[in-house]
Length: 300
Image (cartoon, rainbow, N blue to C red):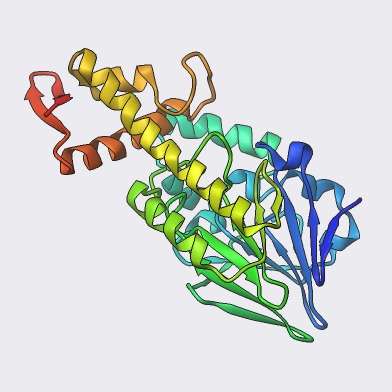
């Protein structure tokens, strides 16, 4: 399979530059050790270059990043400690998602069917700043950039300056923080910190693929971050019309178009909207009032 090469780093682009549900696969070859970053759907088609890796390092845990972790039994698996339980078992991944039980049952069947999801109970944890020496001057360092998940990290091959920034994916969809382990505030801080990483090439998990010019990277981060402001504006627009309950706001949505359905969409909308409302309340733009059937939100 064709790939892009940057010294010891090989990048296999998924369908449509890794557009979800696919992703982009990074493999780093040192003198002594071969490492893969995540395993998206494209990993099924790479062959020996992936099958013979010594170590699988997950930048974070979601089903679309762990497609081949179950079959790479000869490779060690390491995950940031905040996401570790989600890689080790279904119970850990279910807590990671945080969806209602009925949704989780559907999601489990879907990810086992479509993403070949299987747990890795032998996975071990790493921390911010973890360094893997692969031999011959090739080394990888983890930069903890939480928000998308609690353990989300960028993985940087330092000899070439190739940074795999995962699901800070710079897509037009914008930042995703719809799970129980997600954080809007942490994502905002991570968007500031990702631009400080010493890198010359930036690789996203999805859609954008590879960026090789810093000016283009900075512009993409700015546009990506602006989606958060657009979502705030959308919520404030709803509340200008009239006060809403959380469920009414969920029905109108800020992430996905009305009518777009996947098992987890309502859960992701509920979590994301709640995070935005909390920030808007803290900023004094929104107030919550108790009513008989729960809280109702209005402009302050």
